[in-house]
Image 1: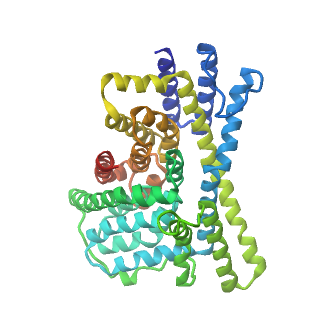
Image 2: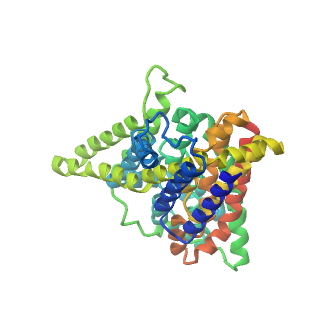
Image 3: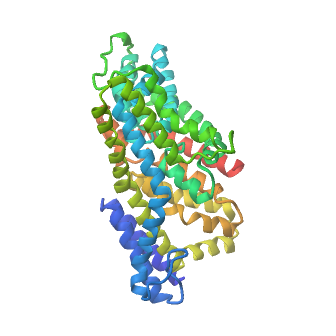
Length: 457
């Protein structure tokens, strides 16, 4: 009980500080170190060593050595995957392949003349694009440049178009997603298996629900706000000067890593194993080859490769370090006994895995809404899940899948999320007005996702 009270108090302080916009990395790391130190004082018999690590000889140094162990493990494992995916996405953006892919995918939608149908289908297309463009804000910026003017000219309101674009990356699907990779690794699954066997089925159901609710919600709010649908000739829409003119073939380049990962896995060719990092490197080098043929300037092409490595560095600074800090915080909650107390309470109350899954999803969702970051929310709780799932007698993926998807969904209901702030500016309204429009579709998707996960996973 003492450990649970300490853990709860520290968690409350962490939440308050993050709400007050203190740096999440620092808050989580310091909270984790405090909990590890508190464990040494309150429960000196409990080990605070990183798994398989040896003591430094003094428990005071062991506290900080835990962070070192986490750094080594994360950078060599999930951290490298996230960095490679970030570098690849940055390079695809640099050579114009991302622009080409978006242009090809939204082209057919421009031929439809039903504004709100196009809006709903636009969400579904955007969610598919998110598999290859894992940055929510990055995808939103591209769609604001390419698709947003078309939606407005078709007759939907600026707020409706902006709100839809703000939800296009809510599910964080595919091996390029940092949260998906972490979920797969934590559950002990191959990323391709996690994506194909677990994410896709629940993703299809959730996308359908969100698409239908996007259609209904947009029409309702536009009518309530007195918006009148006036269709214009979209062929006269100004071209996006910011987009790079590249061969249409470039639209296929962002798909290369995912294709390699799915083909060379237990799904198809099981005799050859394709690692996510390897697939990203192959995809980047294929893009480099295409640029060599297109530009025919070796110096410029090779210089462009630095964009890949700079993208890796950016992902380390933003995401990988957050994983390390969040894992330290989670380790502190474990060692202090807060997790064991919570599991025991669930068992004694006879609540079972369903209630525990709902509780974990609720905590992840609340954190994502408060912080505006699905990554921070999921990373803060993911490492606790295997222990909880094992004691409840279920596979970790049964809890990790809804938690991972809930983090992304809840992010689009946060007025402080970067993507919501970005689209609100384009929609000429406040983030709160955007959230007012996203709550129903995303909330419905959240309910559908959790119900499907609880029943079928």
